Length: 133
Image (cartoon, rainbow, N blue to C red):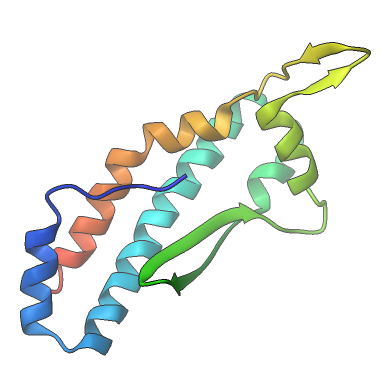
């Protein structure tokens, strides 16, 4: 899922005028990291309702900022010794057992957390960018 910025162009244009391309890249990377941390916190909070031992929450990781075709992105996922990424997928989308659709307690929790945290993500990114003005 991706987030689209609206009303953000003026802040970015002001920063473009003030900073070099490298400095602007560093600022936008910091802003994306701040936003990704907000989303990972929202996902962790959503998992609180159905946690067992809390391993799915512990293994949430925020990746590095990558740039592809002029667009920057950052991944939030699962990595750790308990390999929860396998179960998170089943928990998010459900699965079939004996021909019946099984919807676990955490069904759709990641999507719900992401959609609920879009505003907080945008606020965190904008706040971090405005620090540089």
